[in-house]
Image 1 (tube, rainbow, N blue to C red):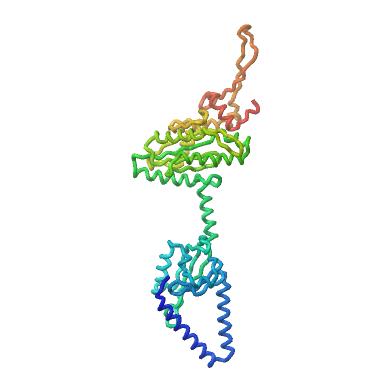
Image 2 (cartoon, rainbow, N blue to C red; image 1 turned 180 degrees about the horizontal axis):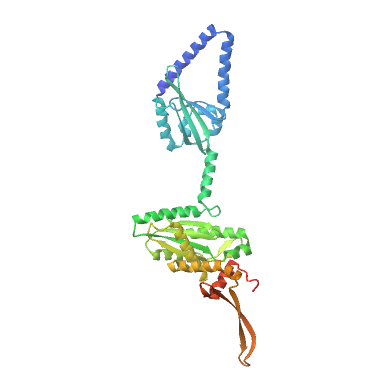
Length: 409
């Protein structure tokens, strides 16, 4: 917001002379009550300016301070007298100076009567300020520019809250990692880029800490949280800056590996992770050894869906857990069929109890030297009306995992 300074001074002098002549004429022609009213109005306007809860300042056409109210002085942490030797640009973020100059020029050329914009500034302590700024060009009776009236509303606290809410929406509060929402968003973007670089792939790693429940139960949730934070730092050291590490919830993490050439690149990352977890974690005088299970799925086409890839990686993770943990398993299509079958068993097991499809069979235990029956082994069998005989090795682990009760058998 700049103008020719000589022109600004001339305009201010003319306006001042005109004001004196007007007041002298009014003093002769008007009764004393009219003069008193004018003085009262002037004093009232000055009080309104000074006591306004909105920061207000008057700038000359070069952007130097002519006056500022208490609210503005408090916002920038500088007394009004000290402001008079300063320029408004001294308190403006360098990246916003050019825009304010451009908009000020539009006011001077008559293209705008005023403008309102959000800008960034700093106070005397060099603390960032975000404000809503409204600028109006003041003209004299001959429509010559005199000065700028600038009003500012401090938005700093609101901007801070907005940034905090955005962070909460996209990042995990415990570890500071990306959350599920941000991870899926980045995965979707990575999938869209695959068609532009067909020689490269991306991969999703679904990770789950082995025996984490035991840590919480024996050492407490505070130690468990410390372990998750320490784990996140070790995992970050195993991936590149272009990759994404996210905490999906609990002790579940996910990694998006971008621009990998094949499964060998992914396997190398998995091996680095397993190697990094061999060293114990030192937490509040506790030495904790742990391991991690990883499910892996690779994506080669933008037609693949992010949620499906996560589900496939989770399925592969389940297989890694079933193998004893501390390993990684690459997803295969047959795993979905297996997972679907287990899901069906879990759902049907409740009905099996209600329909009394589970039967007890007793197998005698015979002592070989005497050939006498010395006891019986109770065996449970499930004969499903559609699927026929289902092996106990399949349905008993599922029932135990889902908490199905055998009461009444």
